[in-house]
Image 1 (cartoon, rainbow, N blue to C red):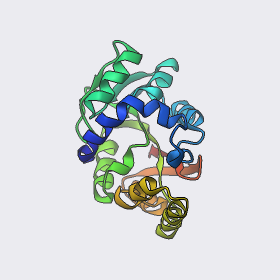
Image 2: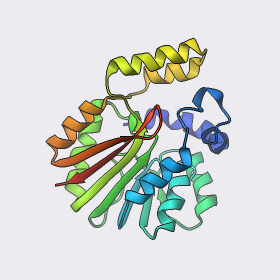
Image 3: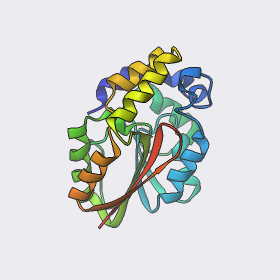
Image 4: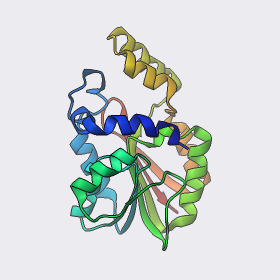
Length: 211
C-alpha cells in the first residue's frame, strides 16, 4: 500500500524541497514546472479536501490559501515534521491511500507525485473506496508520473540510461508507474468521468469527477 517507501521518504525529507526545485540533475525533468503543477491541482480542488502524500506541505499550503478545508495524510514521520513546521496547527496525520480518518463526505481527493506507490490492483481498490466516500460530483485530482503506453515508459527508461541517470532509470523500472488507458478504464468502471492533461514529460494531471 505504498508504506514500503516510508524509510525512503524519511531520508529524503531533509532535502526534498531542494530536489523539487531542480537541484538533482537526474530528476530535473520530473519536477519541471513543479510550482505550476501544484497550482493546477490546487485550482481544481474545492470544499472538504483530503490530500495524500503531503510531503513537506507545498501543495497543502496552496490548498489552504484557496480557502479549502484540508486534512493532510502523510506516512513519513520526517515529512510530517517538515510539513508541520511550515503549516502550523493544520492536522496532518499518519496514514496512506487506504487508511485515513473520514467523518463526513469528501468533496475532493488530491495528491501529487505519490499515487505510483500503489500497484495497479491497489489503484483500483483506492478508486472504489473514494467513489463511496465522495459527495455527489466529488473529484479526484492527482498529478503523477504516468505513460500513454508501456512502450513509452520503456523509451523514457532507455533515455535515462543513455544520460547515465541510473537512479531515475531504476525508479522507473521498480516503482508502480502505470498507463493512462488503464487508469481511465478503472475510473470509468467505478462511475467516474476522467480527463488527462500532460504537465511535463513525466507528469500528467488526472481529473476524475464522480458521476
